[in-house]
Image (cartoon, helix red, strand yellow):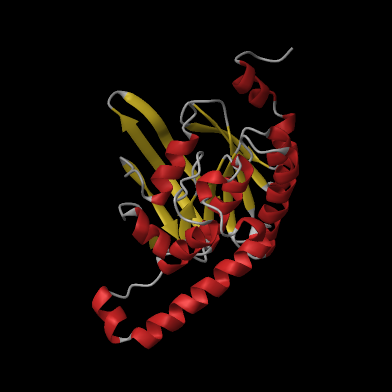
Length: 252
């Protein structure tokens, strides 16, 4: 279980996160919504180690993660994506996945040279898993293309695949549907639902309210760095404070 307790983060005099607390269980999808500037991406950065919180804690199955580097957080099973995919543009789509899978080994260069047979077996296994991921994400047809040549939606799929190559227990996904064509959007929805079925704990930031209501088990509404409301999609949609937060005025 992921437990975030009383997270605070300020930049100078600007208080971006003000006591955020939430819990998320394996096999669930938690949607994080709110107007621009609410602190959603900053919250993901604080949870995943890209920013150090000023106060509070991040716990995964009883182990404290706040204060660890992002790579160490990822090694413990918590991985995030970004609003803008960060693919290796000059590498092929297949190699992007292979690089992500290879990062999970802690072997040194010397060990790789000495135990070359074991290293070769590991790389073969990574390649096999990467090829399976290409099939899973419908990217096999572009496996040998440079990643920079992919469409926006395909880059989102590749970003998802790279995170899955490290076998995460918790996955933080930042705006997966932004700039994605409807056909690929439907694919992403199906993939995200499959992650829940596989027992992965998923947190999603998204401005596509229709999509987030469709796939989420629970939703947290952030406003000005604090949680305004947490509940089921039906509860959130009925609450007049949510409309007020997005439109800036109370509904009639």
